[in-house]
Length: 430
Ligand SMILES: [Zn+2]
Image 1 (cartoon, rainbow, N blue to C red):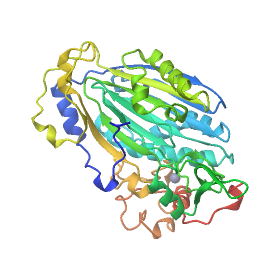
Image 2: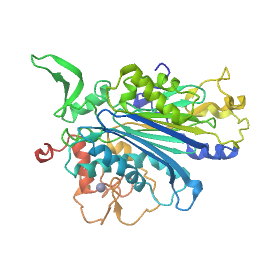
Image 3: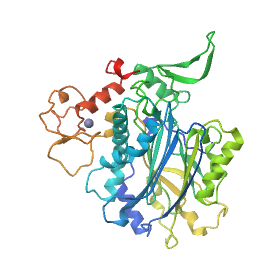
Image 4: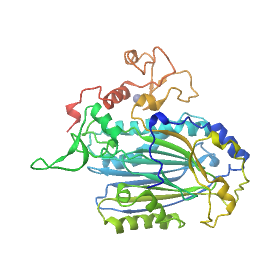
């Protein structure tokens, strides 16, 4: 864990690296060729509540094979499987429906972090309407060429093993025990945080939130726990160097047994399929089968024809570099040329649980006029449907028509509930 990039203080957040600059540089350096994506998965079930999703060949522009991207996800359910199954079936579709139509690749990558927030929240709202009580973590990873975008609620981590052997964490654990900010947020929104009280007053186990007793502070589902357990994901977007890298996405059955480094080391240099099995095996060997254990390994590999001329690095200090290490030894069979580009660039990171901070002021949209479209559920509303809705606060569309995202009545209600501004609804809670 020593070299993990830990979540940073949000006030230290770096400005977004202009994608146009990066893509322009990518084209100039001949790096536009698509990498190969290889993947493998392995799982060991104890309760059977883990699910995963593998969609290697998604297409952004219908009929245009060059617009393909890949999606991988892990869902670790609790109190039943229905939330995990529902998220597996609907989350990706809801994310995609929040991407503005007809945008180019640059705009699509830029719109993804907001679309992920909208898609997670919509999936949660839709699941809650079913009146079921289970919940799930969700870690969804979108790989578009060298750009990796990860959105996550709960504690199913995604790590990156960059080609220079530096391992970094692309997710944040939403565990009450480990996350002070989340404890404060849950408490401020009306939840109680404490340990399980055994007979005789002895406190045991990790911090949980009550009612419900959940250890996580964010999830999809968990209707019976409280709206302060929010589905708003931490999102991180990075751009790998043309040397590529490996992602390991897994449920806590792996991470309770292995550090990020140990998981990466357990399989480094081996094919993805075998690697996933080895990571699961190593976790079981270390801790035994205590929990559902699911692991996806995704390799982003430069294609054989990719030419990597030495790129000018003069301007490198302009970009935020999360990982940089000069390759001192040849630890792989890759040509040593690759060592000159062993850098991962951080494009975006945001983990706030406040929707207004996440949906942003400049939601890219080609449609500047027409009906109001809810930024979460994507339903169109006739402008005079609900004038009352935008009379009061930050989402007010009446005063500043297009500067803030519009939310429909239902989604506004969800936002207020998540922020502890609505009284709890007894009918929803048991
Ligand atoms: Zn809505």
